[in-house]
Structure formats: structure tokens, C-alpha cells
Length: 440
Image (cartoon, rainbow, N blue to C red; front, side):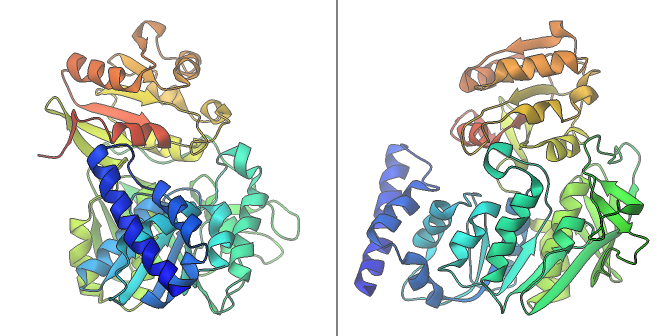
């Protein structure tokens, strides 16, 4: 009944205020679980309050890409709902909608990031107009298994929405092979230039993919992992992107030259260039003004933990989420090796129970760090062992399993910038530590 939906909206907001005052929880998913208990058909009722519904899924980059799309929509003077904190399972999506929907208001857009395995579940009750898929890498093998399984989860969701417009990364052969919907739009990178001091992407961990005919794909260009310009002798090849970018990477930002226009993006790393290209492609597809996009993208602030800058005891602290080998490799290429480094590894459900990915990531790039490396979290000892085998001097390693104590130690010990590399639930813990303050 509709009255139950209205009641769930009121109770969600009351519960959020209670959690905020008591600091019992961040309230990123527990409210959604509560709302679904009261109103199991919440998503069906929520549909009518949003005119155009956008979704983002994929292994890496969901939060940054959806956050950037949401930012550009908002700055273009449109109303938008977004699960900005990155809680992307069913409870997290309902959580965000229940806190942001005003039943007396119609919203122009929703930008919802979805966990790959939950896209089908969400699409059974929530309508969709556009779906952007970023990439598919090995991630949380305990939950997803092999990449074919992850791809099937997403394809099952797509199959539920015949009127969906797909916005796909042409450079990822798995992503480019998705079928369905009423239209498919591709985006991709043509060339990459690295300014002096920026390390080129050449991921040690790569996936090998075969053409549908069974032969291995050949690459004319490979940017990182399996992303690049691929083809097969049978005639199969990377689809032609509608949105093509020539990318120049600088130490503090990137410039994307897309279809004759330059976009200066305040994000570092090739992985973020892909995120920005996908976001720009989506925004152009929904009709945002190109000049508004070019101007507004410069003011984008990353979500917590995604190349986020905070301050610990007055020292600049860069926080970069790591969660799988490909993502970790790309992040490791961007860090300042002279900074004080803290790596926090948890193995909770949202992180993935299987931490074997630590051995697939190329931590050998840290063997020439100049400062002590502190490791923390549930799997601190596993991380310390991995670093030892990666060539980091054991005398430079310090284990402090308690995350708060590790942060306090690094804050007092450091005489320079700080870099923190946490997994997802460690990131949530960091967000509650008062000594980590937002930028000056």
C-alpha cells in the first residue's frame, strides 16, 4: 500500500537522525534493510518520483563514475538522487533512495551505482533508462568466481530491460560484448601520453581473452589489463566508439581530448581517465550542455577514499581504495614513494573473504620506498608477508593490527605526506576517525 511507502520514508529519515546523533552507524545500508522490512515493494513505488534513471556497474570505478555523473547533472541545475557513499547492494540502494526522496517532489535523474551481482535483483523492481558498464576484472573470487559469472550477472539484468540504452567501455572486450537494450553507445581511449614524472600503466596482472571464434585476441594497443585496441583474424574487433579520447596524464590532473573538445579532469591515473570518459559520454548522451560539462568537471570532488585528500596532524594524507589486483596495480603507480605509507587490509564480506589477490598485485613497486611501511587491519600479517616477498626490507615493516592505533602512530611518526591504502570496510573505519580531517 502507498501509505506504507510514505511511512517508510518518514521512518528512514528519523532513523538516520538517530544514527547520526548516536554515531552507532554511518547509515549507508542498515536503513535500507529496515525500509525493506516495512515496505518490500519500496523500489516499485520509488520509480514514479524519478524521470530518468541512470545506473553504473562494473568491477572498478563505479563510485567515482556515478559521483562524477551526479555532480555534472547537479551543476547543470537538474535535481538528482545518487548513492554517493558507494553502498551498492540492494540495501544500500534503497537506503539512498529512502533518505533522498521527498514524496512532494519529482526528480530529474537518479544515478545509482550497483554491485554487479545485484543489478538483476534491483532491475526486477526498479526501472532503468541508461546503464554504464566500466570494466570487468577479477574481484572477490569468493562472491563472483570467474569473470564469466560476473558477466552473466550483468547480462541477466540487461535482459530484463528491453528499452535500456547501454553505455559501454569499448576497450574492454568483456564489456563491449554485452548485448541487449534498444541502443548501445561505446566510449574508448585512442592514445595516452604521460607527462614527466607520471608512471605509465603496464599492469603485471592481465587477463587473456579469446575471440568468440575461439582464437586469442590480438592487440594493436594495450593500455592496462585487457583494455585496449583488440582484433581477431576472423574479422572480430573492438567496436568503434562514439566518444573517443586522447588522454594526457599529469601528476595532479588529466586532460581528455574528446571528439575535438578538451576536458580538464581533477583526477589522477589512467583508471580515472576511463571513469571520466564514461561519465562525460553518459552526460552528453542525456543532453547536458558540453560547455557546462567542461566548466563543471573542474570542481568535482572525489568520494571518500577514491584519491581523497585529508589531513592527519596537519599532514597531507592521500587515501586510495584498493580491492583487487588490477585496481591495486594502477593505484600503486600513482603513489609518492617518499610518503609515509599505511596499508590496511580487511577480509570482511564487503571486502571479499579471499585475500589471495594480494599475491597477484604487483607490490614489488614498493621495494624502494624510503620510509617505514605500516600495515594494519584484520589481515595485517598477510600484508606484511606479501610485502616481504615483494622485496620490501622487513626492517621497514611495522604491524599494528588495530586501525585507529595505526592511524595515530602514522600521524605522530610521519614528517612528510601520508598515503593510506585501505580495503572497503577499512575505509569505512577510517571515515569515523576524527583525527583524519577534510582539506584545509
